[in-house]
Length: 291
Figure 1 (cartoon, rainbow, N blue to C red):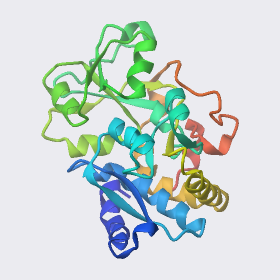
Figure 2 (cartoon, helix red, strand yellow):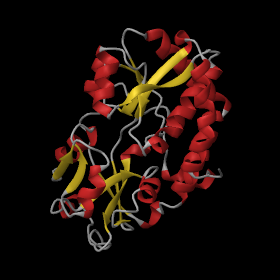
Figure 3 (cartoon, rainbow, N blue to C red):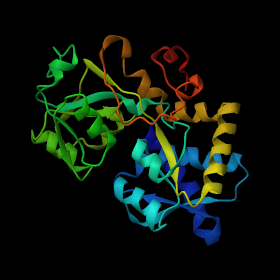
Figure 4 (cartoon, rainbow, N blue to C red):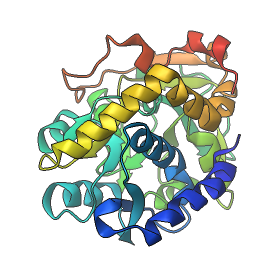
C-alpha cells in the first residue's frame, strides 16, 4: 500500500493526543508543510511500540516544524521534543540515547539516484567508484550521508533545506541526488513539479541504520520503546508494518539488474548490531516480500 494513503489513516491516530493529558504525550518534531507523508511509517512503528509496551503515551507533534539538526539539538538541550528518528552516527550516539533497532532495516544505506529528466542515462556507464567521482551529488549539509559520500571521494553539493535539493537538481546545481530505496518513489511522486527521474542503472550501498533517539535524561522512555519494538519483532508485527509501507517500493528496485557500488561508512558506531540478522534487509529477502 502507498505510504501517502497510509498517512491519511494514521491521522486518526494522531488526533487522540489532543484530548490527552500533557503527561501522556510523547512529542515528536513536526514536519514542514507538505512533508508529513515522510513521517508516517516511523510514527506508526513508534505508536505500535508504545502500545505493545503497555504505555499510555500518545503522539503529539511539536508546536513548530523542525528540520533534522534542529530537532536533534532540541532533544539534547531544551526538551521541546521527546523523540527524534534519524540516521545514526558515532557523534549522535555520544550526544543522545539510541534504541539500536533499525526502523529501516538498514535500507537508508541502499541508495538510488534521482536525475534530471533530460539526463536519464547519466550513470549508465558508471561501473566502479572512480567512475562516479566525476559527478556531483546533492545532500543536506548536516546529513551523515554527506560525510559518507565525501569520505569515499565523491563530490557533494549541500543545502540546508531538504525541499530545495529537488529544485537544485532540476536547475543543474548538481548531477544526481542519492535517495534511499524506500523513499525515492514517494519523493519523486511528491516533487513532480521538478523535472526529475529515477536512475535505472546504479545502486549505492553503505551500512547504516535509522534509529529512534531519546534524551540521555529520559532513559525510561527509551527502555519502554525498546521493549515495545522487541515485542513487535518477536510477534512479526514490526515486519508486517514495514512491508505494509515499503514492500511495494522494494519490489520496484530491481536489485539484481543494477550495478552495485559499495561505500565505506566511517561514521558507523561500533555498537551497531550487525550480528542480528533479523534486523537487517538483504536482497535475498525479496523472495519473501508479500505485503
